[in-house]
Image 1 (cartoon, helix red, strand yellow):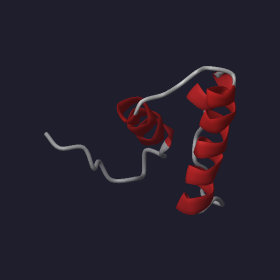
Image 2 (cartoon, helix red, strand yellow):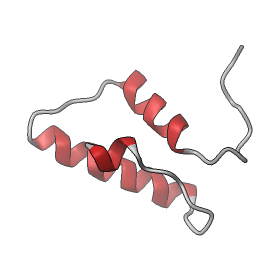
Image 3 (tube, helix red, strand yellow):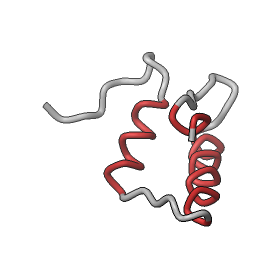
Image 4 (cartoon, one colour):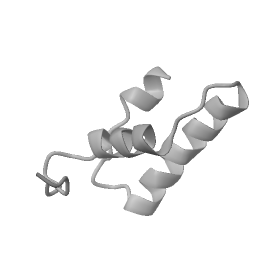
Length: 59
């Protein structure tokens, strides 16, 4: 879980690859009984994006 919560997207990684990495980790955790709802998955994705990405969260 530490890897998931500390994951950050790097410039050399495409968004598709980054999403695949996130989904792979959450799938592995799901297989051992740790589940994430869509809101948590969204928060994990948003927190993993670099600061240079625009803020897509509504205000």
